[in-house]
Each structure stands twice: as C-alpha cells, then as structure tokens.
Length: 276
Image (tube, rainbow, N blue to C red; front, side, top):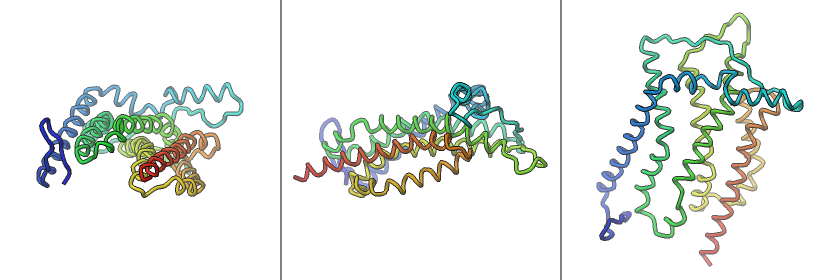
C-alpha cells in the first residue's frame, strides 16, 4: 500500500483508510464546487446577459475585434460576425429555474477546477517518492492554467464562430429558428469545457511519457496524421467554410502538439540519463 507522511513518522495506510481519505478529498472538492456555484447563482445578470448569450452578439469583444481586423486589413475575410436572428424558447414550467441552477453549476465547476486538482494531488502525493514529488512540482498550477486557457479559447474564439453559423444557418426560409435554450447551452458547453480538457494535452503527454507509453519518436512520426485529425475536427466544430477561420482555430492546437513533443523529448532524455 502507499505510504503517507504525518508530522511524526511514516505509516502504512490500509485499504479502508485510503477509501476514507479519498472520501474526504471528494467531499472538500464537492463543497468547493457548491460554494462557487452558489456565488455564481447570485450573479444572475452577469451569468445570463453577458456570459451565456455573449458569444452570439455582435458587441461581444471577440466579434468586435474580428470586425475591426476585417475592416482594416484587406487580406482578412470571413471573421466579422453580426447579430444572429433567432428566438429562444422554454417549454418547461421549471425550465428557467433549472437553467439558472444548471449554469451556476457549470460556472462553479470551472472556477473550482484548480481546487479539485489540488485535492486530487493531495490524495496522490503520499504514494510518490521524493524524486517524483520534485519532478511534479507545480503540476496543479500548470494544469489549471492550461485548462483555463483552453476554456477561454473555446469560449472567446470557437464558440462565436460555431454558434453564429449554426444559429443563422437555414436550409430553407420556410423553417424559422426557434431554439430550445437547453440546446444552445449544450452547444456552448461543448465548445468550452472539452476544449479546456484538450488543452491538457501537454500534461497528458508528460504523464504517458513518464509511464513509457508515449515516446518523442512516436509523436514525431504521427505528426502528419495528428495534424489531419486536428484540421478535420476543427472543420466540423467550426463550419465556417473559409481558410482564415480554420487556421485561426487550428494554430494553437498545432502549437500544443509541438509543445507536447518537446515535453516528451525532455522527459525521455531525463529517463535515459537516470538509467545510465
């Protein structure tokens, strides 16, 4: 069993002690999510008027920036997003109340994410050797930063393109867009939280290289395939149909992949040196 260090000595923890320890870590993380969600619940105007519907409006900061770029630089085309014309509908008597709770929980979970990671790290840390602890210093901070950047990228870049295209798209003028609010939220969440997780690629590669599952050569040899997959995925989630949008969104993900190769190479080199 893993060892845990207290203020006096090291002792072996039994299976049920591990379960009890994990339970308290989960409970503290859950309390953090509830507290952050409660604070978000009180900020109804900000959550709905600005956060939820922002990416679909022309006055959204990202949309204003893209329109300015398109107006001032002739080689940039297809970025400017105008107001989408649609109507949100709610068909459930408790729909708006449940929507308020749902959005508060999403925001609370995102805000509490660093603390959740810290609790997970506190649970795992006693099982690590001192060298492993030194090698993973700052892992919670870096992972939290990557997740935050990924969510921000999805919210400020990917979401405006995708939402405006899909909301305004018409196969025929006979059908008018009356959008279920839950459908809109589902799409918005899909464009933010999964992208935040995607931005954890460098940390995932770091851990997989440590375990010997991934090597730098494997990632280099699979670079072309990975780039094609990235382009296809981006083309699907941002169906704008122009090269500028595709490259704008794909470029950071390409950089993440290259950064992951560098991280894998560094970890692999350290492992080779330690074996000598």
